[in-house]
Length: 264
Length: 264
Image (cartoon, rainbow over the protein chains, first blue to last red):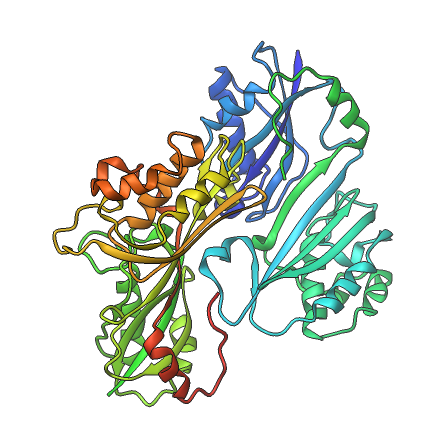
């Protein structure tokens, strides 16, 4: 048996999120169907991040187990011909059987984008939230800076009965503007349910001047969802990459016949 | 009677092009319907550029005539609430009745984009063509340079019985790469049917090494569609802006109550 790791990019617009669920088509079930078609038997994947409906990904991660002798790097090519064009495998590689995409130490990076101009640009509406008014980008960056470090992010999450430990560590946040697009990127060891979208919604409020950046530490301290801003729209969010620090070295030892560039 | 000029942006993905036609929904008919709803009577527009099915626009231009007393700049706001989210008016302003968006001297800029990476990025697939192989961007830029000036572009157009004069003047071409996206922009006084897409398809062939940049002058000279490259896919093309050099000054004299920034 071999374990194959897939780096998966998708446009979340037409999916009810990542995880298989009864109401509506998901990315994972579409991926499972393509794998089943490729190998001629029922296949299942284990995913790293259960992104919400409408959220995009450039580098989500999934693994599956197989007896196939197909070179690991060829799986990406074979799968892509069986997937709809809004899902594309960016890389496929063999990993040790012990590698688990969710129960392994990770460094995840998300990006949230806000299109900021008088009228929306329809060609970018699906991959950004939109705000027509003035936004103080500097204040947003300052607010984001308060999130770095280990913090209890209970205020910035939607209640999830399965999760009791709401402490996460944020390694880096960045807010920058390129022409009419405001980008917010956040890197951490894990994220609670809706966490990035609630943070983005809160930064938007700071940008509008609803409250100052210095209020972020108080919101953190309150451990109360009601103190943070609204949950920003799903379409502005992209899961950019997931790094597994402990496994990256191991992966380098796995034979690759083609050097496929790492997903952006 | 007053004439109102609209700067129209749209995502062409779900439209059968600009112009009203019997088979399928077009941008113009959707715009006419929104105008008719706004003014409570049947309204029609005259458009500047009849973009093909699937082609996008940031700054197409249309005019309509009305007796309304609504301030010209408010029309954009009122129309946008009646339009689907893949069409957004970027600006509305009063122009003299003699202004005709098509039978007036123009400077038009189009941009063609090619996403160039091993596997397609689904979140950018709708607004770019895709090519996985190596492309020589420098050669593409050199090839594009041969198009500048007045030339007979018959080789770079699909036969159109209504058009006999196939000479157009290109003022500027640019080819550049930003990360994994190749951009090709072209500015000229007019474009023949499919002209930008055939040029883009030809530049793609130059990029692949199918023929050298120096072949462009020979293709122009041949006046034979068969000598040029294939017509590149519609989704990579965006009509960026249309400038009316003779009218721009006049427009500045028209009273505007809100200063709406020019579309990108």
